[in-house]
Length: 370
Image: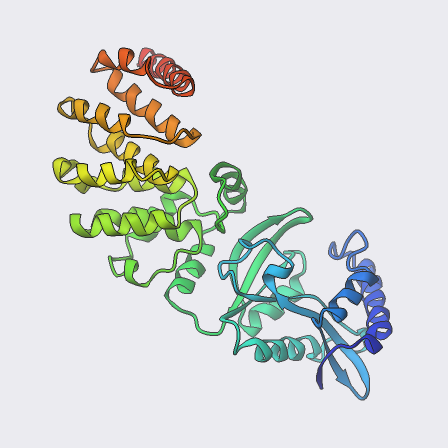
């Protein structure tokens, strides 16, 4: 039978936990290290009402802690921020290979299905038996996550595998742990990062059409990057709407700069888009402003617009790193055509001036190599 654990079960659960830890040590399985899980953690599980047990003939044969994933992990550990999770799954040695863990998991899945869209967990790749069990039940690989106590694979069981879940499931199969760890430091985002290379995202994007924008829920950095790549397929009217939808959920330069690289319609309709760019630049929202500036950098490579670009820069009212850097890059690109840039930059703040001259020196070095 399946029950919520009570404090009267505490000693029996701790005894089973110690038995399992001894078994893990003998098997030389590198999990549950550094006194994890300790007795206090089991006690807290039960006290919070999270402990779940499987009982047979009056004895506890399997245990786990069932909880909202956000109670134990960072909010971006899984794609579904409202997912449930279980931890500290253990089975009594005398009942190994008899389906006890599988039964307990299925009971937990049944318990939360009316209040959750998914169940997620992390697992160490060395735990082959657990991986096989979770996969057999229906959990799907969702990429990797680096936590303070190690790097783990993420698996999720979806009650209804919708459009976004299917996209993330496909992308997880393309993910690279090495790349995920690299861009996690670079992007500085709160978003879940799967770790898919841009070249692979571009190849995957070729399978998609503009219906993506009506069906997707932007819940990973990759779903947002895909959205930015697909902007090129939109009409100029739809483009503005979808850029704004993306920016509403953007907290990193990686998305703004990808947007700016994938709006070739702007270069064909420069006058039409100038009011929209002004709207972005005067919004006083950091990543909206940066997007407008980088679109000017990538899509307005025509000196006939330089006068208007100076006026647009004058309208920038916020002083942040990513905005200042965008202004410096934009002015540097203009400086090789328009000498007025050097006079103009002197009236800007010191941070922009430093960034501009550093970027200009770097550009000169690169040109001298050619």
